[in-house]
Amino acid sequence: MKKIFEPFSLGTLKLNNRIVMAPLTRSRAIGNIPNDLMVQYYSSRSTAGLLITEGTSPSPNGLGYARIPGLYNKEHVSGWKKVTDAVHKNGGAIFVQLMHTGRVSHPLNLPQVAKILAPSAIQLSGTMWTDSKEMQPYPVPKEMTLEEIKNTQAEYVKSAELAIQAGFDGVELHAANGYLLEQFLNANVNKRTDAYGSDSNGRMKFVLEIAEQNVKKIGASKVGIRISPYGAFNDTGEFDGIQEFYVQLTQKLSALGIAYIHIVDHSSLGAPVVSAELKNKIRDNFEGALILSGGYTAEKAEVDLLENKADLIAFGRPFISNPNLVEKFKTGAALKEADATTFYTPGAAGYTDY
Image 1 (cartoon, helix red, strand yellow):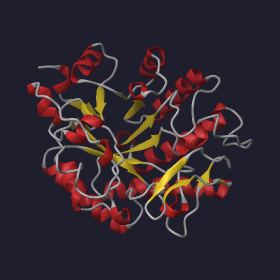
Image 2: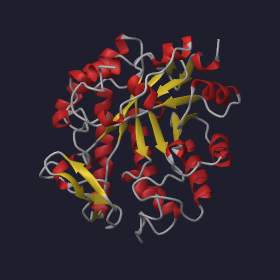
Image 3: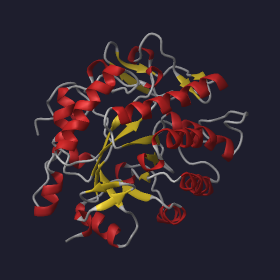
């Protein structure tokens, strides 16, 4: 048997294979509530060893994109419970990715009571989609007070607790791709001079406290994290001492005993390469499982697994148009190409009709 199809123990969870469905924003959650279309979408892909959901906000303030799901009230729990029940019925495992968009947001995408928060009041360049007025420029976010920092951390913890109530096997903290957690980590975005900025330890503090609080609330084996060193998405990018920073962060996450680190490498899509040296250092300094993602084929995944570069490999876009991706990998069947024009549109087209 190829290693990619071998079972794997992730904490106390037994995965059927080493294939992970990467988190993919699909913008089908009308009213930010998981629905029956999403049940069909996830359950049809449950032959993956582990499913990681699309970015799901732990707070009204984190709903920066149109039609992304939340996980902070009873309606969200009920909607997600239908998803997890369907996945588990098919023998799958599923983590929810908790994603607070931070400054990557627009008031037209948020509830009226929500605020656009960030570590520093630095405006993101470019524009984003809103359903009511189409493309709009990003506004200047509000620099978070210490009270807002504590409140946001509490929202993450409450959301993790609700995730377990909803039947999820665990949570992935989204500290990548320029969203709120990475906004604190990244020196180009976090210009604070207090305890949550000013130096590398300060920039890690927000994320590490959330990780520690989640571990205490739901258990270390149910907590993972996604990071994107060298990622340039949403005006992040490289900063001085970046390798040492992520090695130090890895060591501190390892001390918390969390289940996995998930590294994003979007060089296949034109982003800077995450060096093999840094991936190896993270591997060496972390006692939990390592998930690698970014432009993988089944063949490349098998090589990296055999060479012990990772424990699990995540696939994103191939899963969009190939819900039976695992079976296709086993048989060598050709993969369907995804239709990028339907990635974020509402409805079944390009979502459940492949």
